[in-house]
Length: 378
Image 1 (cartoon, rainbow, N blue to C red):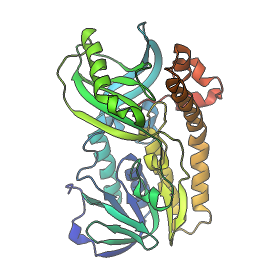
Image 2 (cartoon, helix red, strand yellow):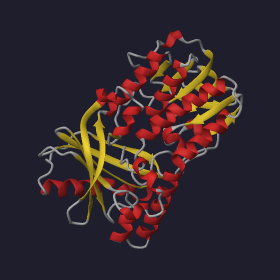
Image 3 (cartoon, rainbow, N blue to C red):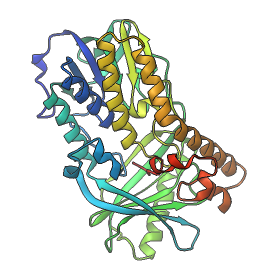
Image 4 (cartoon, rainbow, N blue to C red):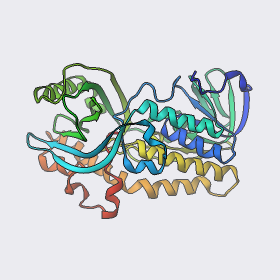
């Protein structure tokens, strides 16, 4: 159990409360903090024993996230100035992309600590085994009976499954940590036919970098070999060293927005972050949308507990308005790339149309929307 978690014996076996948050990642911790600050009784459940560990993330966040997290600097490892996109053997296309690479373990831990400091009671190292009309049951037999449930429990959300709202399309990722031979201020993106449904990346993190790639579910068996080939390429170019540090991997939702609100028994259920399908299926960016949707879910939980009519419907509409257009475009591009790969591999033109650094990606976009959609593999 985390040292910031409430002692297990502080809880009765059957708990009635205002809000239960399932998952204390960026979405869940933000929702818990917002609801607890408003004076609601909040219980947060996290299956990990320590928030944010193990890390399964490339760890980039846009600079604009500082408006949501005023103390973001405490988790920052290095600033990022741009994105450099490699297409073929030529020079990269450099696109301004101000942001930060963070220590994701520190980032998540600080968000969880903020929620606890706001008054949320947190249980780490436990799991929800059932979400039914009577509330939630934990692995140790504890029963929680909330008025609002926030499902922030990741791509394969148990809460989402309970209300019939599931992610069904996924990308699979694999990442290693390697030493850099020189400082670097950009997130590097590698596009090519060898990365079906995804891309390779090199994200600098001080003296080291996160080197990884994401592929479709159908191509996930190729992840080790393709990542080894990318490592060998950068080693031959003198950009990285041979030593391999941490190895991690994960699952990302890649099917777009899921209806994020429903009634379940007596409780209002709200999905946020990956559970709501908010990760961009082209870039893999998901941290910023998790934090923002978590804040919105916390606000909707307050509205629901206060008896405001249509709190769930309002949350659904707000999520769709904010994230829907970008996700719809990304899903179209993702489908087009999948079709191109199935037909023998995408051309350079098709790859350009499928990546945010190129104007072709934005040909059917409103110019005002561009700045919020250029996050990468968060």
